Image (cartoon, rainbow over all chains, first blue to last red; front, side, top):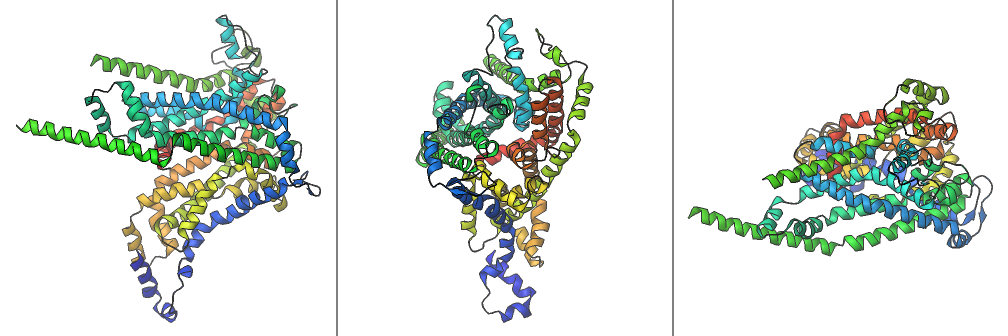
Length: 343
Length: 275
């Protein structure tokens, strides 16, 4: 590569290039810089600058139109004592747990079934993936009607089997369950597809060896499948944590702008809803920016926790080593069997 | 053998139940969109597809500028998609196949931007765009998303494996400069990767809700998602009409997905495995 890239300019423009004794390596890379520039320019204007600017804004009291008034750390001080803010953190975390835990478990079950299914694979994959590409607004409207207190399908069903009805969209827990259901429904298929890819990456030989060693299906699952899937599980855990902390559309569409955007008693008010409400409904831009920073800190914190709990490079290496040991065992066994066949 | 057979049968039952749960809300959307509102909210509820679908769709068109919103959303989605495909593949081509001073640093910087949640810069981005005078215009929807770190990262992984160094070397011998190499060697080879990134980007922009909610302030120029939400807010009592609107907003997207869906899913899974 290096040889050709030097040879080309010399052979092309012998007269112009030869006068320049020391070709500038930066100038030579000009086309490459031009190629990567659009991203970095856009990022500087719409990514990096806003992030820095948001620190500045968060130190001010500002309605977005009038003059900015310096208040220092007052927004953050208020944030720490703001009961509504803590409530939104609690709401978000509860909705996150209510959605992520069933979502990842169901995804694992589906992925396992998909892995073993030989027929209809493409059909299943597309059917499971369609919820993920559907617009959240449209689907939230559908679920809103299903969970509707008086005439909703769910309550009609509960009534018909004699369980009475639940006021899903007015009770604190009902609201959270409704939002978590929408999130789970949308993301189960996506995570199942990712898990399926992880399952397919595990060599069949490892399972073969486990079978030969007389491992039960349960042992195989916990000793081989889960450890080998660790990196994939980490990926889904991190992405669903980040996604879970950013939930907004579901609660906003379910409850709209009427009175509070988080439903009765703010039971469905998430961190991002609160950010939106502070900045764009109440025009407290400085406070909205401060909420944004709190969200950022939470995301970093939870990503680290996830990483520690599930991931970690050492553990990854350990599972790989275990896999190699098993593979070696099979190779030895196969060799023995082949030798036996010959004789 | 028979135990195996029972196990696969059980597996299929589980999968089919999952498919039912996955698809039921769509069925229910059609049921609601094709009945009258009083019928939906009667007890016991109507569970079958009715005959009022076109009537409800007509009401949607009477109450919001549905096709205007759809056109706006389509232009924004296509605009972002075309720009993302061009800028991301160009940058990915450079990152994957060329050594230049600062390459590793720039790529690390690019990966670091993944960490920043978009909501963090929501307020200042709005302020910046207001300063530019872009609020309410298509530029606000298209330009900030015209290149993204995910796309470059993903395309770079793809390009590293897909483009043989020999092809580039041959193009160089033929006297092709960097951009010519990108056009003649890079783009044709990257086409399958571009298809995935294109569908992915299109769907994301089409479905985006928070950003257009904030920047499209003119009630006559709303994207489909925001218009749909508006329809629900103002005419929420007419549930059948709202559902007809939801159905109309979802159909084009599912169409795009079904055309390219199979490869799309495989590529998405492959991409996740590389992280």
